[in-house]
Image (cartoon, rainbow, N blue to C red; front, side, top):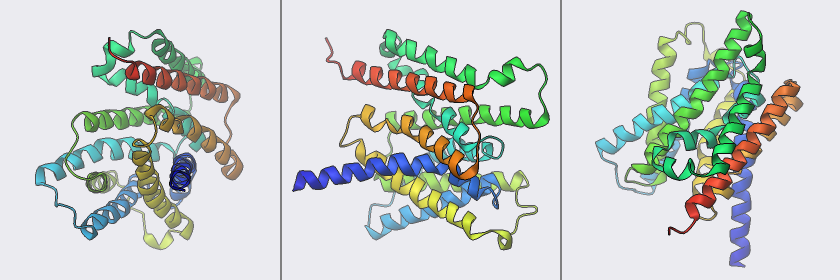
Length: 310
């Protein structure tokens, strides 16, 4: 009975990763109908952050030190404002499914940025091959921009947004690796809560200086956009992330990391189904190539790092 209960919890946690994180790309589009991008990010982070910190106070967890709060706040700016805020901004100019395809390059950036594992990873021909295949897929996604001598202003913003998503993935990986190697004392709820609040403050400030609030008014915000904010905050920033962290204690990281292959497929499908988004054939081929690359890199890296030391 106990094993059955655990199996159900694991299945639900994987469903949260696959479905919630896979649908957040389209939900961002819904939120952007009434909210400016960095203000949307700030609201999302604020709601999620206060809920998590409130939960920590309810559980009477130890109050973190000032140094821990500052460290988590800085990580939040890098991981969340950089990793999520820029993604939200980019979805003003590119399809949600296309953004998800670009985010699927995360396993490649983990290898390229994790300097401590270079000697291991770059000595493995499968990992190196996977990275090269991944960059081939990225080049295919940018085919139109690379082959066209002159592009319109709209296409220029699309190119900038695409590069922005890749940069957001690098921010996510850089901050995550720093957190992995220099963990902060405290519970996952406390650390994530302060990261969210740090990102919220930074995103609010950025939104103000970018002039996003000049013509904004809450009176014009629809219930659909408010629903999107709460879905992103509670579903994307709390439920899915906590599920991800818990699964890492129950399953190998390579198995948990399968969300990186499933999310883009879900994002492309629902973007086509509900938002009439069109993904070109070469972009679909690029997605398949990137997903194959991610699978090769992720699984090969797992086998190499799990191999017994001689």
